[in-house]
Figure 1 (spheres, rainbow, N blue to C red):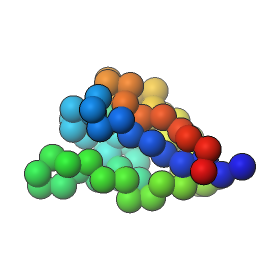
Figure 2 (cartoon, rainbow, N blue to C red; figure 1 turned 30 degrees about the vertical axis):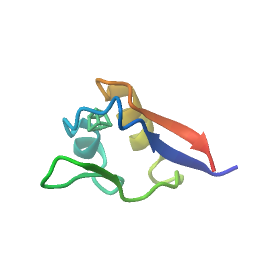
Figure 3 (cartoon, rainbow, N blue to C red; figure 1 turned 30 degrees about the horizontal axis):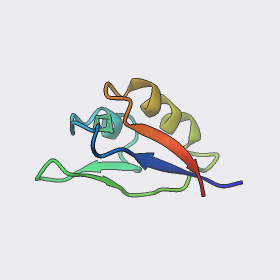
Length: 66
Ligand code: SF4
């Protein structure tokens, strides 16, 4: 089953930790708004996405079944 990245924007404080780990997936724009550039979890990005989930200080990132 495909998994997708989910961010709780009510929790996110736009500190960019996730973008520092995997900028191909997480991008903060000039207005400090976080965009998910690639929602889908793949074998290539899975480890880094899981690292971002671990390191997000707000625990705002999760995976959902897509
Ligand atoms: S690491 Fe967490 S709090 Fe920081 S920008 Fe990413 S989702 Fe938001």
